[in-house]
Image (cartoon, rainbow, N blue to C red):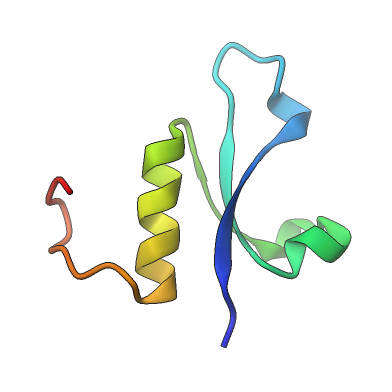
Length: 65
């Protein structure tokens, strides 16, 4: 089973709106765009999405943890 993790996009690190990526763990081996599952402006959003994709989120969609 694939595992999804959060990574900060170094490409956009100097932009006013940094980008946080939820990626398949295989992204670390080659940083191919095909391993990117979603993009987020806030790290908290990315963490919640990674938990959901990994099946670790038991909260209903739209709820605040």
